[in-house]
Image 1 (spheres, helix red, strand yellow):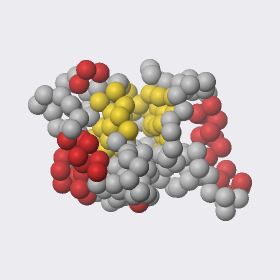
Image 2 (cartoon, one colour; image 1 turned 180 degrees about the vertical axis):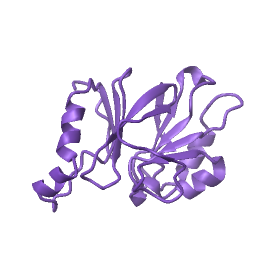
Image 3 (cartoon, rainbow, N blue to C red; image 1 turned 120 degrees about the vertical axis):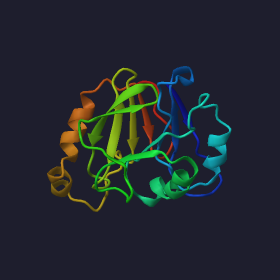
Image 4 (cartoon, rainbow, N blue to C red; image 1 turned 90 degrees about the horizontal axis):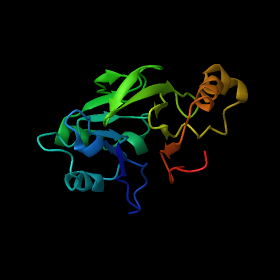
Length: 184
């Protein structure tokens, strides 16, 4: 699995946009963007990426949640590539595939588990690949300061954290900032 961060430091507030390709651009892999952000420069970066002969550059989008910094560029991505958009039911309009806790989703050439992760937002999910030990966390590591412990707990945040702690995670790709790739 090849993971590219298409985000740039050009002053536009946006999330990390991860472009996941299958091994060796395998025909069976599904070229996927995890989040699309709001920086239009990613469109040029996608065009410059070798994504496989005869394949659509972006076949699928998986949104970790629907906040503007993660989903604003979705209309332009749809117009350019017509991908299948996958997200939690409470996320943005125009979702093609509703993702629910425990479902599987093929990203690149790997299978990922969808983990519902309320706390930051009601539509937050993480994507976990058991075979690679990779977790796309979105903003799920961010807990609103204004929320009480009871509010967070009743939505299942603590249960989701316990489930994540039981996974063999080797790399975490956050919605903002650098990934955590070593010493987990």
